[in-house]
Image (cartoon, rainbow, N blue to C red; front, side):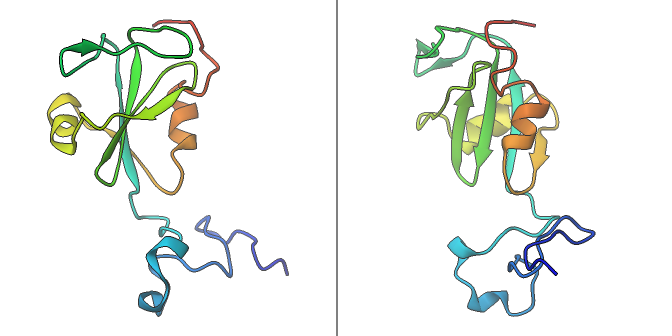
Length: 129
């Protein structure tokens, strides 16, 4: 049997997760999150975004609106429809909570699935909804 095949929960067999027995012995940077553990949150921000009074403009495609805002731990990231993403140090978790305007999309493990699901993976580059 392949030691890294998926089990019914989608977790990889043979790879330690957060809820595995004895996980206290595994350094945090080496463990995978449990299938039910939320790693980050995201919400779409359709309007222009201003950080410290300066309008945000994508450095790749010059977009000025329609962003995906992601929060992982205490870091807030901005992602454009073209797929360009950067950490925005001026945006805080408190700003994220105040700006989300509804329940955010929560995701486990990688944020790539939520990025693709919400159309911020480059597929809709240059298209504004």
